[in-house]
Length: 226
Image (cartoon, rainbow, N blue to C red; front, side):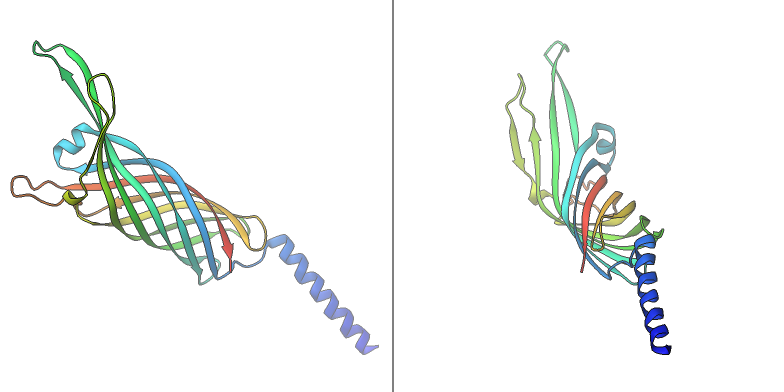
C-alpha cells in the first residue's frame, strides 16, 4: 500500500510539473542563437554643413545573434550585423541668370559590420519585454557617394572608403519583446538605436571635419534555444 501511494505521488508530481510548464512556460535556454534584420532611418551629424544640408536616409540591418542568459531576467546579447548607414543631400541648380533648373540627389552610403555587446533585462513570465544597452564597434566595409540619374546628370558612384576611418564606436540601446513559439523557438521584435560617438572622417590639413553616425532600426527575428 505504501509503495502504491509513493507511485501515485510520483505520477502526480510529474503531471503537476508538466501542467505548470504548459501554463507558465519553460525556462529560457541559457544559450540562444538567432537571425535579425530590419529597416529604419539613419543620419549624420557633426560639423555645420552636415546638419544643415544632409537629410536622413533609409537604412537597414541584417545579421546573426547570440544570447547567454544568466537568469530569466538578465542576459548578455551580441550580434554580427551588416548595417547600411548614411544620409541624403539635395543640391538645387540654377542657370546663369539664377533660374532654377533642377536638383541633384546624392546618397552617402556607409556599409558597416557592427558588433554590439548589450546587457539585457527582461520582464514577464511567457512573452517577455526587455530593454538592453551597451557599446558597439563597427568596421567600415565600403563608403560610396551615389548620385541619382536625372535629366541633368548621369548616375555616378564614387568609392570614398579611403576618406573615412575604418572603425566606428558608440552606444547601442533598444526596447523589444520576445514571443515564444514553442519550447526552443521564439520570435522577437525590437527598436534599436546606434549612436556613434567618434569621428568617422579622416581629418585633412585643410579642413578637420567631424562626422558621426546615428541610426534607428525596427528589427525582427527568430531565436533558437540550444
